Length: 139
Image (cartoon, rainbow, N blue to C red):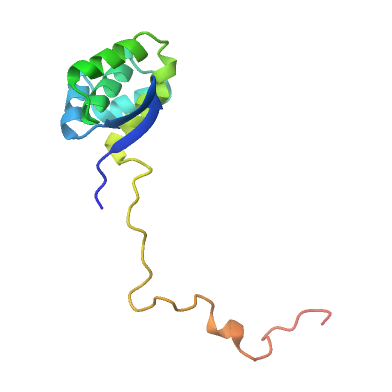
């Protein structure tokens, strides 16, 4: 399974899908005049610019399936019409998913070593009938 950087968040007036693919990350980079990892660091540290928050959310909405016009309307209503701190964590989650992949995306679980399925992980010596090799004091 590939990680496509999609994330769904309860944001604004409902649940929205966000995705920052390569093209959307390039748009964010251009709008903020910084690379995505620099922006991610700025958002995380609280030293971000207003555009860091709004552009991440805007392009995340576009990547998530909204038209650019609809995304802009949502950003004007729920980002620019609100205090910046309200959207900082959402922007961080969206950009983090774009840079690293979304945390809820299941990666195939690591399988057991080939040919060892169903075998016990308990050491065979633990079940032996032998006396312990060390006698405990007071025994």
